[in-house]
Length: 248
Ligand code: PGA
Image 1 (cartoon, rainbow, N blue to C red):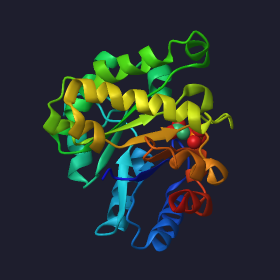
Image 2 (cartoon, rainbow, N blue to C red):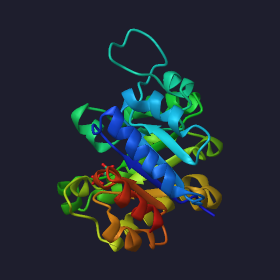
Image 3 (cartoon, rainbow, N blue to C red):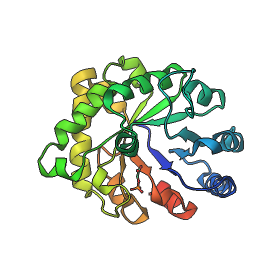
Image 4 (cartoon, rainbow, N blue to C red):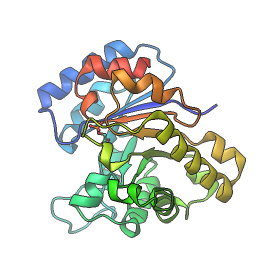
């Protein structure tokens, strides 16, 4: 059975007090949920929220990490530092970092390796622009992002990877991929994993959908065969919306 995962991505939102309140509110409501619940929070809140969630079911993710473990990289944070705080996951390759910070697959390989070397699990993001979809390039593009970013890993190490498919045109726009559009590409991603690694890994890898996922569409999206949960931006900033997505 694949792990079902709901991960929040707070992006650059919430001050520390607001973050603590949201975090506490989520913790009090997830109870014994058999899903993996993760929140991806700003770097400066990691230490406090890791402490607050210690020993609970709520896992913490960083939204990025540097590709080197230490050194003269002003303003950067390494995977070693994250691991030292007891952080569980790093989100790597989010489309906002790909586009605003010029992160390409070649750099992302190094970030993935760096995170895994510190025993962090990785949520690896992929997804196409609207132009790429209109040209019918989305299958190839997503396949490439996956092949170039994570297919150098052994099957054993791949067990620490969660894939998040996030069509860029659906992120923060209110426009969601239909459940069949999302299912179609998730199934393609699973086939690509199957071709490279075989049935066991294809069956066990969790593939999340992200892009304007909200309480009103989560159930429909998550009911698709190859959608194992979501990476949630805007709707993860309100405890009740996030909880209702987890319940979906
Ligand atoms: P959104 O963001 O839910 O606000 O569309 C998703 C994401 O970027 O992870």
